[in-house]
Structure formats: structure tokens, C-alpha cells
Length: 317
Image (cartoon, rainbow, N blue to C red; front, side, top):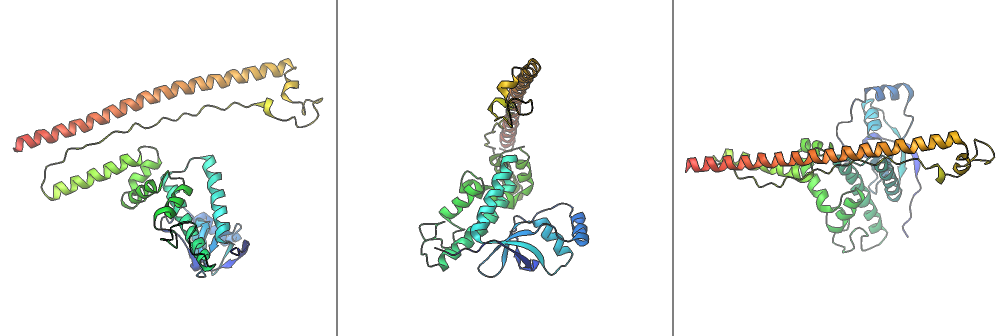
């Protein structure tokens, strides 16, 4: 069995910490954080993974690392994890954040880059331990596990993509049109719609450069799903009494229901929850109707575009 080091804390040079290119994006204004570290020092250490080549890969704390680099400090306080510990920590962070709010495509790509680094290091350590087949790629064709086949499928699933193909589409879009990815993140369009826009723009540019007539646009307009969550009512009858049921503070729901004031308040609460859900249901129906109207208008736009292309073609003929 491969030996694993326990998590340790220490001071390491910032220049020895690698950051994924896809994670390195606009981190907002960190001037105040830089001044705070200058005055009080770094309170919360960053988290890194130790690699077999002697360096480190950043797992958490990008803004803190950038602030320390601005201050040109020689070392930074860090919690150093083994690859397995880094994998567990990243998956725990992912689960906690996903529970609060679904990740955007950009955030999933950032997680994918860190997962790739972790899986690659785990594969290296397995190879050093004498294992001939990489767990991330049982075929043995990708010993470091990060560029082909099943290995990328593992990364895609861990990052929350439905498949390796979907992750590859998102990566391609992010590399070529980050502005469209931002619109996907905001829920304004799907990845498929963004790809169609990008392909049409490339085709139009090619037509202009070669003095060709615009092409007929063959697009299926996707209807955006409308998500309106149902309000989850508080269920006191499912809660265990915190103390003695003989006291108001400790009584459970069944005993409290014997009190007419509590009974009335509980009935009013349930009625309010029902009204909220009725209002949300109406909002969902209206939003779905508006979404269908938007889709119809978009289809009309493409149809008019195609008719314009045909008329221009007949004129030139």
C-alpha cells in the first residue's frame, strides 16, 4: 500500500506554488487584503498539495497567495496535503459549495484543473510504488492519467460535468469565447447555443473574407428551462424535543399543539407557505409562457435571416 503523509503546516516560498492557468482569472480588488496582511500578517494559511518533483500545487487560497506575492514576502504559511488528502479536501469543498448554490461552467472548469493536477500526482505516486496500471486509466495507455479516455471522464464527473465530451466543449468555448461563457454562467444561454453563435460568426467571417454570400443558418432554438423552487415548510413535528416536555422551552410539537395560541400560529404559518407556493406556481407558469414566446421570436429571426439570404441569392443570380 502506498504510504501517505499526514497534512502538515509550514512556511514555503510562494514561487514554488503552481497555479492552473484556467484558475488564474480576475480575482477582484485585493488591495484591502494586501494591506491587511501587511499590517496583521496572514491569519488563515493557504492550502497546497506537495508534488513528487518537490514543488506545490495550489488547492485553496488564490487571493491570499496573490496578496503575499504583491508584498514580495519570501515565504507564506500553508497547509501541505498529500494527493489523497488534497483529493478529499477538494471534494468536500465542492460538495459544500454545490449545496449552497449550483456551480457555473467557469467554476466547474476551475475545479477540473485542480482535479487534473491531483489525479496526475496520484498516478505518479502509484507508478513510483510499482503499480503498472493506473487506477484513473485501467487500460494502461495513459500512465499519468490526465489527457485521454477514462482519466478525463473521471475528472469531468468529479467537476460536475455530465461527460468528458461536455467538459471538452466547455473548455473549447472558454478558450475561444470567454464572453459567451460568462453569458452561459448567468443563465442567458446554453453551451449549445453559445457554440452555435461562435460557429456562425466564424462562417460569416469566412464568407466576408472570401466575398461569398452569407450561409443559410440551420439552428434549433433551445427553450431555457424555468426553475422555480417550491418553498420547503418548517416541520416541527419531525424535530426531537430539546428538553423536558413539561416545559414550554422543552416541549415537542405534539404537546405544543395543545396550546390554542400555538395551534393558531402553526395553522397561519402553513397557510402562508401554501400561498407562497401558489404564487411561485403562477410565476413558473408565466415564465414558461414567456420562454416559449422568446423561443418563437428567435426562430422567426433565423427564418427571416434565411429568407433574406435566399432573396439576395436570387437577385445576384
